[in-house]
Image (cartoon, rainbow, N blue to C red):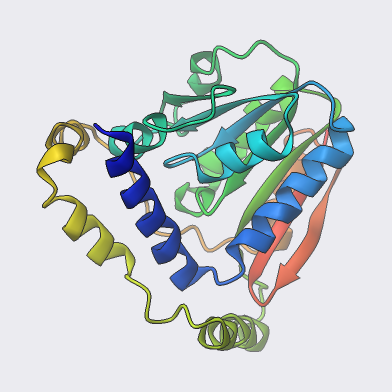
Length: 248
């Protein structure tokens, strides 16, 4: 695949993601700020969970030039797009995060300084998520952080409704509500002959998605504490969009 082809589809990926997360770049910056504050900007080992095409992985590596980043995802198509133009300090690997052995696939010796995720873990069941958090905790150094940026419920019906409304109103103000949506992006991509091998690889891969787990931000925080994190809570919020941090 030519780099120009990957770049085109990654730009379209970013645009369709902003339809759902109008402050996506600011949210990325918050994740990076937490990792930088934890590592002091020095050499660091960072794992990006559910990395997709490496959007966050690449931004982390660009902002933290002494960091080594490994992105983990189960989708060979998204990984193929990301690998076509990734930063040399970013490595993307294929693994299923619901399989407890995923950490072995990273090839990144511990202890890690940080693990991050963006708009990825809401598909995991509470049981699988608890196991994932335990695996992350076991591989982080003391004082290391897990930083999860995602939509998370507030746990009260009126607040959940208002949280969605705030985000949807922000989307209209940002002008991203008419961006290509998720299904349109996938449908268009499948018509690109250059990507046919990746489309075939994806069709041959079992990518298990449950329905969204519906956990509140506070339930996520409790799962982190149960997994061995000393502290857990949100450090940034816009409507129902959160950046949640667990400190090992």
